[in-house]
Amino acid sequence: MSILHELEAKTSMMPEEYKHLSTDALIKRAKRVKEKLGDRLFIPGHHYQKDEVIQFADATGDSLQLAKMSSQMSQAEYIVFCGVHFMAETADMLTRADQTVVLPDMRAGCSMADMADIKQAERAWEKLTAQFGDTIIPLTYVNSTAEIKAFVAERGGATVTSSNAKKVLQWAFNQKERILFLPDQHLGRNTAYDLGIPLEQMTVWDPISETLSSSGEEDKRMILWKGHCSVHEMFTIEHVRQLRESEPERKILVHPECTFDVVQASDQSGSTSTIIKSVREAAPGTKWAIGTEMNLVERIRHEHPEQDIVSLNPNMCPCVTMNRIDLPHFVWSLERIEAGSANNTIRVDKDVSSKAVQAIERMFEISS
Image 1: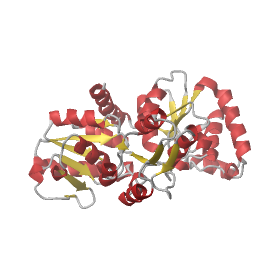
Image 2: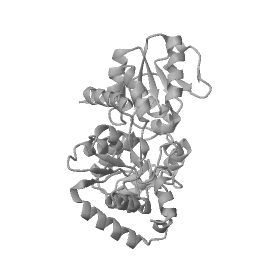
Image 3: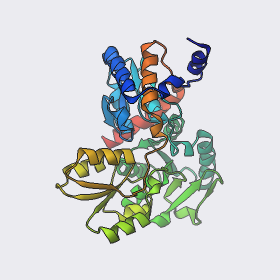
Image 4: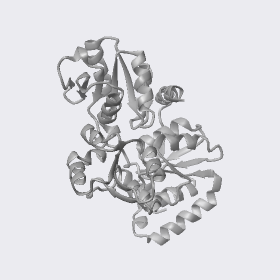
């Protein structure tokens, strides 16, 4: 190995040669390694991944679903998680210690998860409990770091997904008067509103200024962390209005990470699995405008040619961080595993992991 390659390996930098390989060459090399490793390798691929990577996935799904599947692959020594960092963390926490989770590109993060770090959460908790006393229970969307999941578990809370958020919020309101919901304010607001909590009883915690957005705090039941999904905030009420005027017959279906006004103006909102199911079960010829990540919208369109499907935002781009997992990085990761020196491995601190898993397991118990 050259000095340059040694440096690249140590710093998790992909060698330049992979960037110059043709797509056909990369596909051929990926197939070879995958066939060689067989059951020793499991490749989960998130719904938002590029098709060039998804073609090699052993399973496609949302983050928690894929992490659970990874934990069930008893023969797999390596989990090459095609998603973003927090997803790979969850897979590491749910799999055995002798299994190795690899993220093909360590730059594949999540802007939403990054909007709540552990120091911010601890300061928020100190200030909020000083104001409200022992009346708050924290919940976190699974789109959060392992440390935030552990933070929630230590304080009696749980994780939530977009599929089970209503059930977990109902449980939480039976525990305490108020919920601190991290890190996505939109999922928290949309879910609480569906449960009958008026907007007047919701407030937003700004982790930068360390202040709440509104007065009359004693009446607040939902304390929403000021975080959001950069992709889903790109769908606006103006997109809805324009579509209603030009194609009133087209159904609008959005993810609950979209803003409140967009969700309220749409025909339906739901998790990724709900979006996929709704289109799959619809009558042929149904017209849809879907408000979620573009790679998924394109895949749904390809899989359902009998439907008329467009993006709610005609200028929408795929998730930038998710798309850092590309074919060159994927092949590089496979070949490093083949060479016996897996790179970009994800290891969550044992103490953090044990606490974070409690929050996940609590969610499983609530939603079962």
